[in-house]
Image (cartoon, rainbow over all chains, first blue to last red; front, side):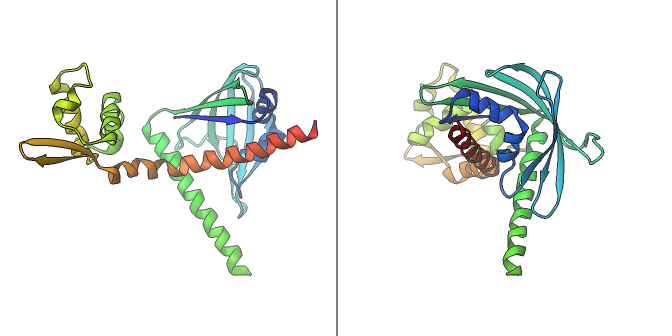
Length: 147
Length: 105
């Protein structure tokens, strides 16, 4: 699955926003979810450990292992779901990332390539999106009802 | 073998057929003219598309016309929608982060 998006910002800024955790924390999770970084070591063989924190206090931990990094051009990474103790949750398929960055006449372009071991892996992630979306909606409803 | 829309669009020739049919309904002959492969091969692809409901057949006189079943195509779209939404939300947030970075300079 490939996603291409142009940004009205210099390449250096876009690269920074993708590779520094204090910036990633501000945009990586779709609202009202929040990204909470525990550790970040952006280098070949390094990893980013973070949680997707939900509005009802739920947390999904992720570990992103960085592969090849070509500064301001591209990087590869493997994203794994882990439990609270840092063990890989085997029932979730890993996600493989290949992100490319380039300059355009108006700013920068990012091309994100996400792949999975198999179709079931993709299906699973999408279904999880559904589920979280649903939980999210329920959370909003709770707030509304509390008023 | 059970056929579904995702198997149907997994093949580049079948995607090309769908693109052609999106413009207007076509006879098997007119469709085959767009491809280098044999009429038989094209017809087989159309068959797959027909089996999973992406393409409908319409008889007009002695001729068969194939047409796109838009309703079925929407299944692909709605399956993808949550994923697209995630990335749209995410990137809109990234826009804000980048705008802030610019302001700070």
